[in-house]
Length: 260
Image 1 (cartoon, rainbow, N blue to C red):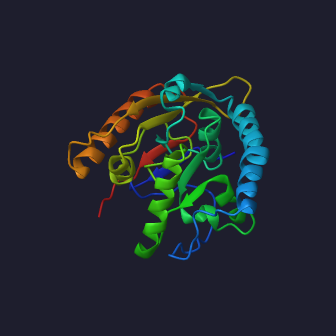
Image 2 (cartoon, rainbow, N blue to C red):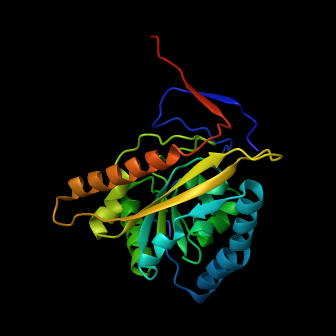
C-alpha cells in the first residue's frame, strides 16, 4: 500500500507519482503487437483467462471492495469493439479493474513501455493485452494496426488519457484529446469509467466504486480534429461529474507554486 500522505506536484499533465522504478525498453518497428501462431493464442488464453482474471477479481474485491455501477450500459455493444477511458490512480488496480468491470470482454490496454520492460512480468504482459506506446514514428503503423485489429475483433481497447499515475487522486486531471483520435478515426463507440474512493471502517484501503458511462459516439460528419475534441470533452465532463462522488482522501495533493 502507498504510505504517502501528501504529494506535492507542479505539472498536472506530466508529473508521475508511481512508486515503480523501471528502465523502459524502446518500442521500435521491430516490436510485434499481434502474434497469430496457435502457441501464442494459447499463451494469451492461459495468462489472460486462467491466471490473470481470477487474480484480478480477487485483488480488486479483497483489496478495495470494488463495485462497478452502470455495467448494463456495456450490453448495447456486447458484440462490438469499443474504447474505454478511465482515470489513472492505481499501479496494479488499473490493470485489473477494467477486466473485472468489463467481464467477460477481452481488454487490450494502451500502456507505457515500462509495462513490457520488467525482467519477468514484462514477458507476460503482452499476453495480458498490453499495447505499449511506440517510441519511434516508424513503429506507429504496427501500433495503430493492432488497435484497429482488436476493435474489429470485437474487443475493448482501454486508454488512460491522463497518462501518468497519481495514486488515489480523487479529481480528474486535465488531459489532451490526442488519445481520442483512435475512436474518432474508426467511428467506434466510447465508454468511460471513473474510479471513486470511499472510506471503509476497519480497512486500510478505501473502497473503489467504478462508474461506467456511455456510449459516446464521434460525429463522422465533422472533421477528425473536431470529432476527437468533442469526444474528449464528453468523456472529461462526465468523469469530472462522477469524480465528485468520492468522499475520502487517501493522499493529499498540493500544488507547488513556481516563484521564480
